[in-house]
Image (tube, helix red, strand yellow):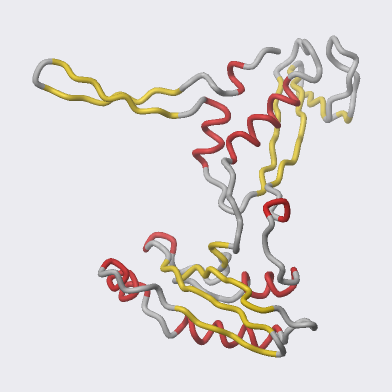
Length: 221
């Protein structure tokens, strides 16, 4: 593997040139991340957010809201222990059944040294339960979660057009950091947005799924 070799018709230096025997290909890496702070989000200190996110909660996500903010950082151990006890006391199946009957989700308020934080417990789906190491925060306050596919698509197009004609296979490796990363967003960026059409033929109705060409596969070199 060679780093930043001059390749292509534009005289640029892609990240890696990989050679094995008589085969070669080019790899370019790019990192893209969702900017939560730009959406006017949380005022909690990052270490407090991290403590909440690390509370062992195999059966529930939590949403939180800072009702009031103290002048000093709250005691993180007490916050973590109290949230752990509260979440462990809840039954996800019972909460789900009650929510389907229009009963509000369980809520808990934590107060200390001028801080007042409100929490809401959101049951994980059965297939996502049982992992105490998974992230606990499901929703940050006042966060608008953008469509990841647009950000991934822009990253791939930016790198894909940078070097001109390479004459070699070219791989763009995209690192994508997001609140709720979804495989569907990556598929849409690479293969096009999935749409569903309904059609009527005689006395029958049917549906067809296709992908729009709004993806990097249609980008000009």
